[in-house]
Image 1 (tube, rainbow, N blue to C red):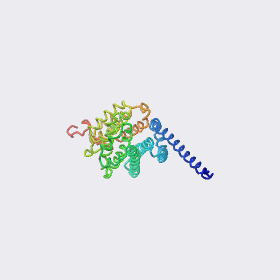
Image 2 (image 1 turned 90 degrees about the vertical axis):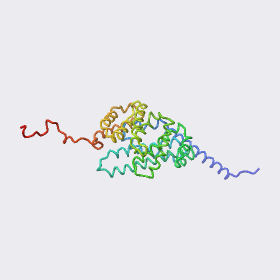
Image 3 (image 1 turned 180 degrees about the vertical axis):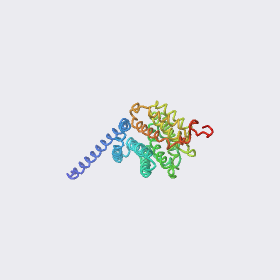
Image 4 (image 1 turned 90 degrees about the horizontal axis):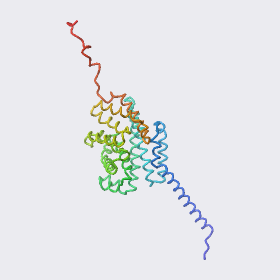
Length: 327
């Protein structure tokens, strides 16, 4: 029997150790990823009561998730968490602050909006990749407008992926509606959100209905905008959230109420936003606090959105000048 030389044995041993080391490392990373992507893990951000603290921490957290995702590219939960955090950050800490800037700060506003659009699309692409990994051909079918073929295999547990991918997609277009290339792809995002609604109408206590308040209320008619549908989804969103969410109120106020120049409704909706106890929904405390800040700003800047009567030109009859004969 031929003896195996010692150098050969060493090679086998080193290879086994390297393989074992890589396996242990990968297992450890998966364990970390599983821990970070539990439903409870997300509330660390959304349940916080200090927006500035979360805003400062999120960029580092997102890049940490993304670094881990690069190492474990097939981890669905990690892709969903990374992509959704990009989209949330773009909305809460870039687009919203930009929308509250004065006209004099148009350069800063433009810079923030461009950043928001970029991150919306980055988040969308990360989530879309997860759908493609589970359902090969998903993206090609969607791009070819074979919506039924693309979406038919998708199951209810994947509704969060449809929701966040579509939200990032449409969020980017809302920022830059003159991007015609992006605009032509909007029906694909709408198809995903429509299917998500069919699979789980009650998703996150009415989150899809909240989205549609903004969608139908802000889109032009030729792209599907419809005030009646916006109001229908508003009622469903309020009902499903049991009145604990501020998002539907502020979405209807900033779209339909302004476009219809319904000042009374605008004020009533924003007053309701301020009445909601931000602690009534601990998991979404951050969103409610941010929406209440925005509501106060909007109420302080009503004249920027509504044509108000000029008091200087309307006088009571007793203050009106009288003819000289009356003196």
